[in-house]
Image (cartoon, rainbow over all chains, first blue to last red; front, side, top):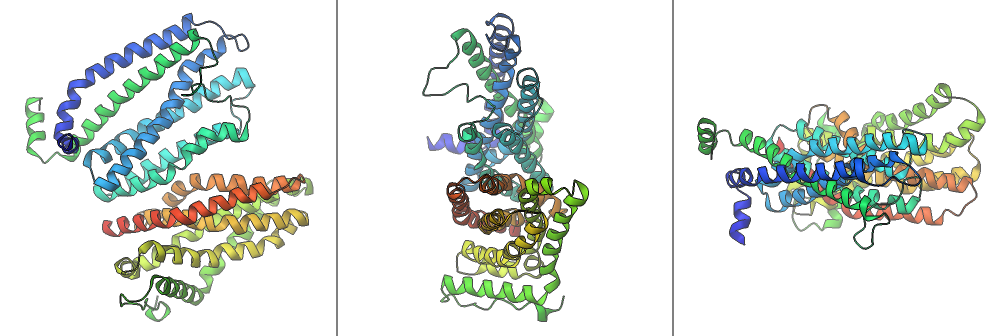
Length: 247
Length: 241
């Protein structure tokens, strides 16, 4: 167990092991995402109220879900950075922050596209939307702070502090709908309850969420590998990898 | 800046209690601030000017101002606290006082709390005192002004405390001011929402006890957690240089 823990801290070990399961992540992700999106867009039944326009849910919910999920992952990695000073944890935070930013933007964008036909407006200052916007700002702040500090180690730790302070926002996002009870519908999936929509709708949705998760995993690995190569460029194994193309 | 204006912290021996150390830091920050009076005045002038921009820029109609007044005052207060945050650690960082503080045997978060308290007394509290005058200028009624002052009284310490984290994180960086705003404004939004929400509720004649309790909860949360985060950030920033 402890050996595994120590290995996890080694960039070289991660580089090797991630290369092995990355193809599976990508293949599984594409498969699930395609299945979920095609099923959802083409075969799932129409909504009795919103007609076909609800189908953007198959993109909106996965991106919104991931946008929050990525931040929580970053916060967990930030704790690891601060407590154990594990190199890989801050590589992870640095690598996924831009991904989270893009996912949050996509969630807001698809939400706006969905809002136009259903609510009749692109944007509304609803609690849920506002807190997603704050999440977007937080991601922006994390990236900006990381870029502003030259020293790698202090950048990692400063970013970790900022991420942890920002994590206070995640429960506010999560429960804002219940607190303010405004225009946005409550969460689609809850762990404790059966989804309120028929299986033909929520199964493809679940598939696309899982698919996006796997794709995110792949993307995180790719970006972490790049980051590791940059950071470890003076070590021997990186030189060998660059010369031979394998670890 | 002459050395005369900036007395050093004097509690070098480790047998000074944490409370005495906090008092020392607080007293010193007050003393330093009152020797640089213009720095004290600037955020207040900024506050007044931002508030006066709205009637000029949007509309001087009484109905608009009455509706938006609380929000305008809150935003202006938020911005002037943000503006003053740069001073919180900057001078101490430049002349090395901050390093001495970090080296003290007393826990750093307590000293940060003392510094933040001094910062609030010097910026947040004067803003609250100034609010009734500006409230009358934007045609708020008496009850709303009272509630607004109360929300600012609870809210501005939260702004100072959260801001201390940002100020500590951006210490010694290029373009620290802009970066500070980028980091801190998202974290200010919940306080702003509840602050103005309370005044709006009071304007509608609703009971504001629950709102104030929530703001109090924000204050407690910030008071207990922010000094730790700011102290950690300070240590990181100091090891950076």
